Length: 305
Image (cartoon, rainbow, N blue to C red; front, side):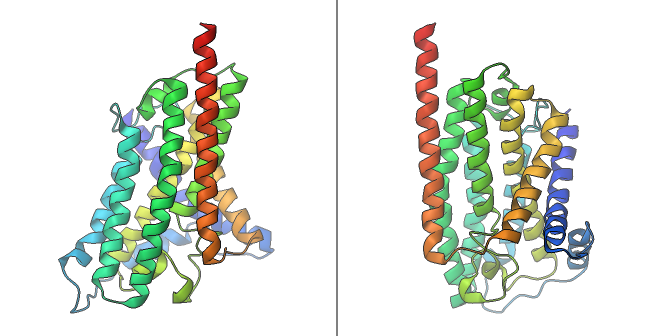
C-alpha cells in the first residue's frame, strides 16, 4: 500500500511540470515542447559531471543531496486520498513543514558559501519568503488538525468528511491556501519566474547559478517533489468531501498544480519584489481567518453535542 502511494506521488511529481508546459503552450497558441521534455533535460544533467569553485566548502557540495533528501522525506509523509503514506506518525504535519524548511536552509547556506553577491541576494530573499510563508503553512496544518482531531496527515484525510457542507467549504478554502503556498514554495509566477535570466530579480534560480550536472538535477527533482507534495495536500482537501478516494485525489493533484500554474504564468506577470511580501502575508492572513472559522465550527459542534 505504501509503495503504491509512493508511486502515485512520484507520477504526480513527474507529470506536473509537463502539464504546466503544455498548458502554457496551448494558451499561447503555439506547439510548445513535448510533455516529457523536463525528463530529457534532467537525464542530460545526470550524465554530466559537477564543477566546483575553489572557494566553496563541503557545505556547497552536500546541499543538493540534503535538499533532495528533505523533499523525498516530506513527500513520503503525504497520503494520496485514502491510501496511507510511507511515513505516518502523530505530529507528522509539523515534521512535514520543518523538513521542507531544512532543505531550504541547506540551499540558502550553500548560496552564501559561494561568496557571490548575486547568490547571497537570492539567499536573503529565499530566507525572507520562507519565514513569511511558514505561518500560513502551519496555520493551514493547524486547521486540518482542528477540524479532524488528529495531527497526522494519514488520519486527517482518512476521517469521513462527506455530508458536512460547512466542513467541505473549510476544506476548499484550505486547498486554495495550499495552492497559493505552492506558488511560493515552487518559485513560480507571480512570486518568482524560473524562466528569467536577470540575476537582480531572481530568487530561487539565482541560488543555483553555480550548480551544474548531477547537483542541478537533484535540485530540480527536489522541486518537483515539493510541488507534488503540496499539490497532493490540496487535492486531498478537495477530495475529502467527495469520499477521499485515491483515484480522485491523484489526478486532481496534477490538474490543480499543472493547470493553476500554467494559467497564471500565461495570464499574469511576475510581481515586483516589493509586492511579494504582501502576497505572502495575505496567504498567512487568509490561513488565520480559516483557522478562526474552523475554531468557531469546532466550538459549535461541541456545544451541540
